[in-house]
Image: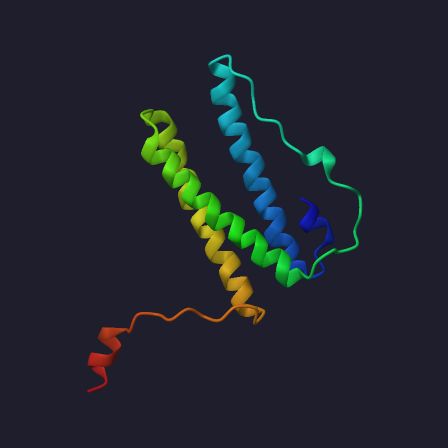
Length: 133
């Protein structure tokens, strides 16, 4: 949330705020599961974000850091899915992994578009190469 309110570039801001909405959705999903089992829910720290609009970091650093956290989260959800014996949780993890992976790709594309990251090497298009002969 904090990065979203201080980002200068509109596309970076929209990307980060999209992630905030996704995170809220996932907290709601897992909190509802915890509540069903009479287990205390997760505390969010949204209320601890200041009202500052002065960016402490560049959009480049905030976007890179956000993408790093996204990819770390993908690994965490994958590990959670592998270690859980509950099929109901695995369904939620699978849906979240698909959504978050697409979100991470959008972040990488935004980094590349702004010239903040190089396009990774791609596999050769073998069909196109074969048709050139």
